Length: 383
Image (cartoon, rainbow, N blue to C red; front, top):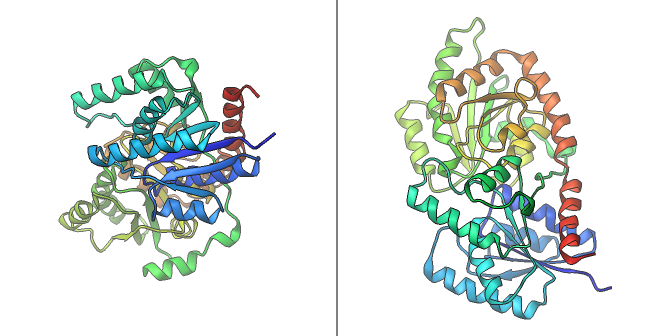
């Protein structure tokens, strides 16, 4: 029997969604599938897919709504689906799902999968856009063979707000490949950032977009400093907010207004997440909307305690009082209090880090993610 041919469709992605697709594509290839990825050329994602030896099919898919680009992409995908003879076309994220599933209907491609990675609708989204997103997804779900969500929270959201039947949805957690000791270089990493020995480093890695809530972390910095000045033992601290995105200039400006520029480093986009995580003592996830957060899972696998908001799928990752602390979303004061507890209690930090490493490796396995996704394909194909 010829190998089953799968086309993955995705917008430009540099964070967790990119890592998810790279891991999944390589794993499916190892299981005997013929995998191709349709994504923007000359991107970080395209480069990593090509390194795996997989075919990249270039498309004009951009993140925001863009009528001109979206129309071009729609026609590109139609032609691709008609000529490619794919057994299944698998869309990742809301934008790929919107344009791609519309193209699939026009190309009469009936075996499709949609993976929902994040919340598209959250509190700050205007009401009219919420109605548009929800009604559109409800309509497109009817022409989708199966919907995968990366957390139970996302599934519950689709059922409650999008009126999608629960039996249409399968939860498959993001999986990671645990890092080896060679992935870490704490001394070298800290030296590159100019961080002095003995400093407690609080960090995060995220795309600088509204849903990541990074402004709440920056607002917490002076509160953390003030609290630590009153502690019995002086503690030197430093913050690293790694990543890039549209909000970066505003976040750097906020740090300046709060007078914490000397405490907060903005190194920009990083290409070695494990090495950067080795710089940290504490990981912070201040998101206001989060599907699951691969970077938080990676931080736990690296042995870091976590302070995170109780948003979306994060409570499925961070276990309160076991692997970290969970706080109210948009709560800078509560976030600061959680970080201070971790900074001042080395024993708790170490225990949470150890617990988190075990939980991340056992619960969020890349092998399980790949096998469960392949199981969905086999179900759709009747194998």
